[in-house]
Image (cartoon, one colour):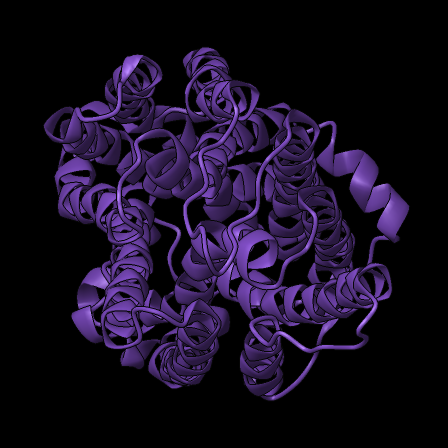
Length: 480
């Protein structure tokens, strides 16, 4: 495909405009992974402790092992996708072949097998079953999601257009989160008394609908990626640098270190809050299970509504200012949750909406910054290495989040968490457990948000600096 496939406005790399169908197809690529991620973040811990019957400590460890492996395979897939050569380019073969196993192994996490009548033997067997399922699911999550995220820098070089592209991505991402929560609500209403059946059906339905959007993304963006690659052949050149030399270069890229710090702080707050919400709503607030999904819907619905608002504001004031505004709103909400008391339902949902304003920025801004960092690296090394950058960002995030979630569940176990039974579905938890829940719902996420604000203040790449970087890259290409 030649440049004629791009409209005239796209010929200037400083103002590359993508058409609506390309943006929609790109956004769809995050729909399936968002569905599985939201269900996993929100329901996997209570499923393991309350339905599968795992001790909270074992539930935390099985998720930690899955996350550690998930983090380890990120750089592996990133480097391999950077080096992939095929008629489909570097990224698409991974998405095509990984989509179906991704759905299968997600479903296998929601089965409750019975291995032995001896409870201690069964606990051990369940631990290894869920650990294996977690490892395999997370491996294929990386196989489809990491190459997808690396497409951002390969579809456009425009500073603001990348923010717009990511607004479509995260509209689908948040939309997938909302869809998964609505499915969970419907299934729980149809099967109100059988939680094991609820999770089994939820896993099956979400597994099926998560696979198809990946193929929509492949077929909907491939022509655009081909056209950009033909005009900028360096985008499809396999990386020749040895892995350890790549790692050394990446970790001397100062703006990249800021971005992974900002991303880590944002998502530490997102995932810790989402992970503890089921325990907070049911055990601390003493509300029915229905409110778990409703609370999460309030956050995600607000986040989705704010995406395009923040995209517009970003064009006016820049990414850093938008991030600071959003995180400030979210910080107020997190502090408010700490002082919330049972019975304050209106206040709870007000804080959820306020948090959603900031969560929207956590989706949008760090991922809009990362492609800018990759351009800086290209100036310094002469090679495009999206895979290694995206993989290392996610590597650091997953290691830290795995440790955080494991610590949360370990703490619940140490504090004496009482598992529900058939005769007592919502047991009264001891004060020690309630204090652990309050600790993870507010102080820990709040500290992470403050650190993210500090890092954002010192982040060095501005719109003006990025324009200079693109000019240097254009001059280098003309010189070849």
